[in-house]
Image (cartoon, rainbow, N blue to C red; front, side, top):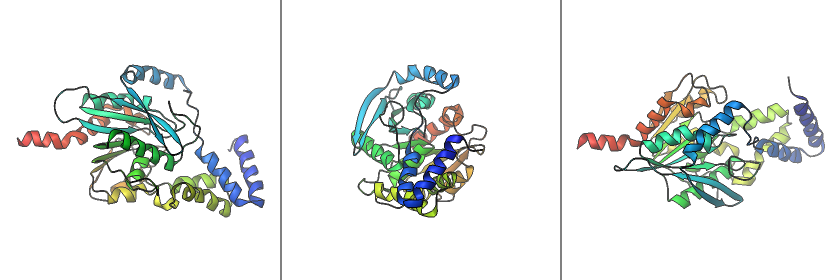
Length: 304
C-alpha cells in the first residue's frame, strides 16, 4: 500500500498536470533526481563506515570540477611494487558512497592497481542533493581529464550504467571515454525502465510522462533511448565483464542477460547468493575482477 506522502504526491502531480502536463513532468523529474540522505540509517551501515575508515585514510582527496558542479574523488595507490600498475576508475551506485567500496579498494590496490573513486553529486563527500545520468557522465569526464584516462573502469549499479553511457558519448558536449576494460556489477542495462517505472509509480499522465522524459533531452541533447548501456557495451572495442546475482532484488538479472546478449566480447559471470549490495565486498568477486584486470600481464609472464 502506498504511503500517505506518495498519495499526496500523486494527487498534487495530477492537479498540476490538469493545467500543465509539462510542469508536472518537470516536477516529477526533480523528485526522480533527489538523492537519499547520506546519513547511515542502520547500525550495519554505521559499522561498515567504521570498518572502511582505515582504508579510506590512505586516500589522496582530489576535487573535480565540471559544468554544473564538482565532486570529490579519492586516489589510492597500488600497494605492491614492481609489475605493470593498472589505473582503475571505481564508482559506486545510487544511494551509496566510496566508503562502501572499501573492501574492493583494498583488494584492487593489493592486487597492483592504482584506484580512483568518485562520490557522485549528492553522495558521500560531494555536495548537492540531486543526481542525474548526464551529471554522472560529466563527473566521469572530469576524472578522465584529471588523471589522463584509465586502463579499467569498474562500476556498481548506477555507477556501471554511468560508465557505459560515458563510453558511448551520450551527452552531446562531452567526449566518449572508453577504458581498456570495463567491469559492470549489478548494473542496469538501460534507463528507460527506470523512467517508465517511476512514471507508473506516480501515475503520471501520458503527456506528463513525455515531459519527464524530455528533461533528459534538455540536459544531454539526447533522447532517453540513447542511454542504453547494453547497446553501447555491445559496440565497444574493449572486453567487458558483467558480474550479477540472480537473486538481485534491485536490478533484475535480466539486465545482465541483456548485456551478455549484446556482444561476444562481453563475459557474464553469476555471483548468486550475494544480492545487490553484498556483491561488491565479496572476496570471490574481488578476486575475479583482479584476474580480469591483470590477465594480459599474467599471460605475458607465462609466455616469457
